[in-house]
Figure (tube, rainbow, N blue to C red):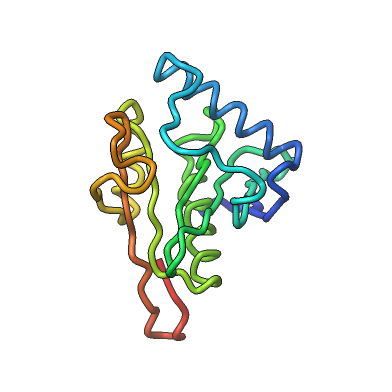
Amino acid sequence: MIADLLVEAVPFDHPDAVALRVAQRAELTERYGTPDSEPGPAPTAADTTVFLLARDAAGEAVGCGALRALGDGVGEVKRMYVVPARRRSGMAGVVLAALEAEAARRGWDVLKLETGTEQPDAMAFYERHGYRRIPNFGHYADSELSVCYERTLTPNPTNGALAG
């Protein structure tokens, strides 16, 4: 686990949240060769249930992730991103675990997500964390660039809470 990491909820339009989303979009533009590779509607403050920001010991924003409610106990992981200098440190796993805990607190029992064909690192990450590939859903159903995943959050028998 990363001892120097603080994960906190911030407003969607918080300057550090905006900066990380801009960096993520720039990276995706480079990978896909277009500034508009997102097949579905981009998250907004109005449809983002929670936006989590990860800060290192110096207070620098180094990672993020968000949740969007899909209804009926299902949520979608959005805007997972870790700055390149902090990748392969376990930070993304900490952010994902915090998102899963937040989903559980909200009573959601399934998380879905969409990533893309040009993000094999993301696909491997989600598979390592228990997400299984599913048919493309919702806005991503007809996207040839989308790869979708799902994870069912199950009850933790030791305390009755949901666990990822």
